[in-house]
Image (cartoon, rainbow, N blue to C red; front, side, top):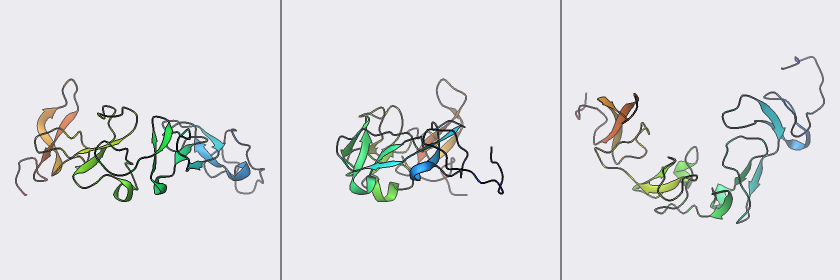
Length: 175
């Protein structure tokens, strides 16, 4: 809980609970304790530039150890590898740096847990043709557009299915 603007507080020690924006000791920050957590703790964020260094793929977690993508490193199965080259089956980054550090033209960064080469690290895969499920990916995985298909559901669920289409309209025509 925020003690208020008029209360002076000492910096919070590393590993101790904190609230967003609170000052942490030693240049640390108040991070989420896990990607899906609501609790926070002070920790340090390390950017790694050594091949084989142990890394953590959890975003914004306490004491995160992230590989330096600007130097071509990716966290692959818990270790930094100089592997961001954008080729088929190569590790990739999905997110803010995708355009700069993503996949070559004709490929997309597959972040699904069923990625063909690594279940824990995203890899570059071929864009999907029209008629293939795209799982509401926003079109990043399609050669064309990812469009919700009226009446279609993902097998075994109640979630609407999305298919790659050549046009952005489910009917196949421009509105």
